[in-house]
Image (cartoon, rainbow, N blue to C red; front, side):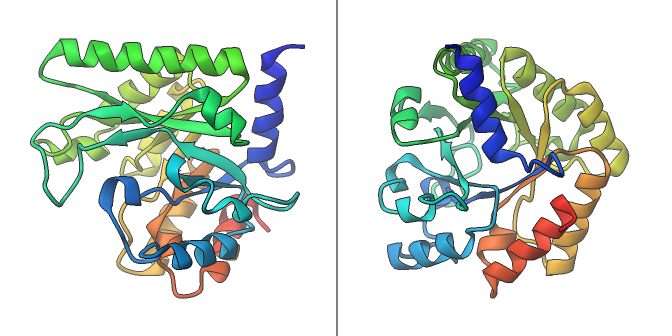
Length: 267
């Protein structure tokens, strides 16, 4: 037996067999941002996660897995992504000028809970190179553990200067560097912000050696703006989307899921 087979089986649960793409919903915002619309109470969270049954994967924080487990039980239910890290870089309430990251569990814990993937953050560009060194060491250690246990590893590659240099979020050079580092550390999938243009997405897709998933970011002013962002991302070579608020804060969540499935899979 080989743990690489475990990764292949889990990747097969995440990516659609026909399109080769994946629609992932990030539903772990509470651990960073608190009770947002669409996840204000446990009752609401249970209803919302069940309404998202047709997505390919659903990401939740470790502490919510048991409470929301019904959303993942059954052959037609989403793959389980575990939001593996806490971070304080972008918090709006009680903000820090400089953030930090820390793991919320172990790869073995996630494996025991039935997870198909875990996601951590990789922040680069710290003023202190020693902090960046620790981020690299931390993510590399997670990657080696995922290799040992056959867990799919997703890294969200970001700039540590987001609060002081918000333009970094769409700087193609910054994103290309961070995505490449994430892949070279051992990520099976890399998640990135949309860099602002089709050409920049094409560059990210070409220079990232593993499948690229693009984030939806903050909720768009209109649903059509979010659809346009999703369509541009897929047209330019992304292998999938990791959208959150644009889906789980919608009035008709099931309808939104169907709309995004059409964009990602063509069905």
